[in-house]
Length: 342
Image 1 (cartoon, rainbow, N blue to C red):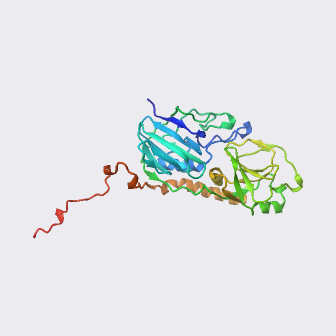
Image 2: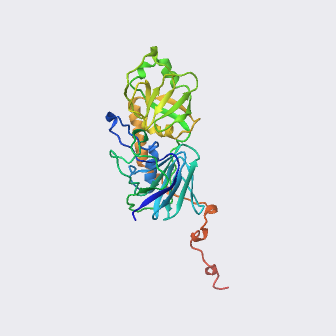
Image 3: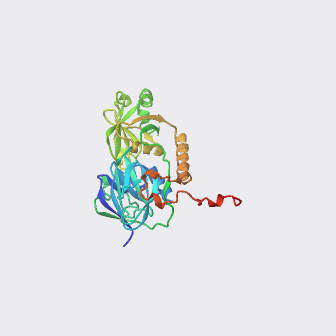
């Protein structure tokens, strides 16, 4: 029997995701891929493998999974309650051994929006246009269902019980953006106000876009100008007819006629993806040269993730098999310390 992970119970938002399929905008297909791309790099660091390998993305709620053989797993992104059938709780942002036949149950998010289950060797569902990512909006693949069997790649082996402190990105924050094709159509006063007010993440959000509600009135084009429909991409900040901004996400449409006040830097998109309704955001414009340097530093930080790995310290209070662990080494009977002359 080949290596596989069986989904015994699937939440409503489970999909297989990798880094997506760039290069198809001209054909009407957006990149897709993981909503929180940084989580794929973190999972890869924990398992010592390529971040391009596919994982299970869990939007808001997880599910239950059973392994056909012992396998290494990692949990990243929005923290969720994860347990084995024995009752053992698993640390998030860490790697673990999932024994053969054991049931891994993952509950609802405790913070953030998207959690990720990685398996050593990666998930090897069929590739479509060079990617295993499910793109629901385009009809490429489908959400996972109960009893789905996920084939896995070969695991060359490696350690488990490693932890990683993630980059903070679960509660909103400041989004850096560069000018877009229509930024100059907004009056300077409007552009300045855009960078002074706070925004609240609305309940309307998915893998296509996230609505941000401004604290105050919406934003209008100078003179009420309209724009022709043209190419758009993830990160673009569209201003809709009522003046409300939408940040386009990985499964956004590829053309649109709403004016774009700017485009969020790729390294800040995880902040948008992971925010829950009610999270607060602000915007700050940076130059193209500054954006290039910011992205360069972000790539360097991703490359150094393995240097931040640490042994997973387990709480003795939750260890069901405590006596099987060598908690103290070098214990003696004590007689070796007796004075020979006594």
